[in-house]
Length: 530
Image 1 (cartoon, helix red, strand yellow):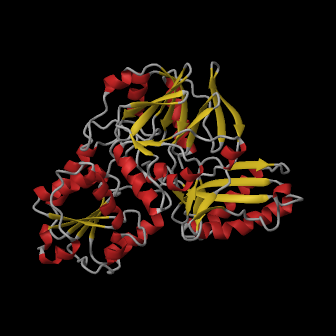
Image 2 (tube, one colour):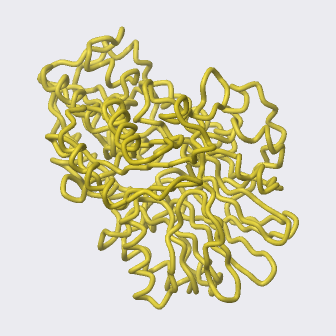
């Protein structure tokens, strides 16, 4: 959920404040970071700094900020999106302060510079954080896109001027992938080639926050003689905020959805939300014939210009099945990968950045455990020390001896329930208690087509309880996962939790309070990293 804290002496700052959707819980509630550890350690950030406007970096700010009341510093687009969230919750927006990419500010013992990088949303910035004799580059999400469509390419000279830095806290999402991530310019040209061959109406589904992709689709449509319409509240909201900042001044004129029926099919292009199979999104309504102004026909084409987020595969598969039943042609990441570009750096980009900034140490973040391991291996091949990968709740020290893990603070899951933040009860909360210990289980899983499999290391964190044989539990778990017929993470959790409780009851004298989280991962066998 991308809430990071940096401390120097007695001063602290927070970087990003995101959320996640708990796909393994009924109704997919919003989960936000727990602040219990901050309260226990008497940490209160003097400022919240936002690297970019994606939900997994800003989505919890309106929920957690009232407990801090500190200034929030964000670039114009992220600030605009935050203001909309604060207003929706009835919060004052006075604390949200705009800083332009490239500018710096001072906050107590810290000096922070917002360093522009390219990503799949405009104004993404790394943060150069300086305190005392130390300089840390927190990259946020980034890539080196030579043709980002919105904004300028990365300025290598500006980054070289930062060298050397003591530590890079770096994006690991695509670290196992060789080469270079695809440019938005390349995607734009592929989209135009695709549209040229389409005969009926076209629906393109992409993430609402990817303004460059939206602009590329609209420009390609205009060159192919098609009129553009937006479908979906998230898309309309994002375009409204971006236009207010002057980002989409050259967007072709938009046609209201209600007027599309008056146009010949070959002149229609709709940009719609719903690429992840979300039940209430625009594309799902179209697939189910539930849109009042638009109906898909056999000659139409649907283009998925987005990659499936792990865990969403069953929803997307059902959506595509319904589209095929309508006779619609589908283009997606499998038959036409050129229609999407990742927003994260592959190995060549990581090497280039590290050659520029010359970090002494790496702390890999983002991605799964295998992505972080690949990132560490790449860094060490470049002479960068990468001694550890962090786990949620780790307190890590950077000093003259390098990086070290000081302590671990397991994070109790907190979800938004009835407009309030509430701790998620443990599986055995009614039978066990904190007096008998707490067991945190995070299990990374992937669908195999016939069942489920565990990927990577089981994250098991036991506190104040009798020792547990992790190998024995892992072996038992792998056998059970393969045999469970669940279609979704929520169903898998429902089937698995009584089995886990029973297994623990047989082996432990006192049952601890068990916190289980199933995390959807992307199998290297069944897919590739986004």
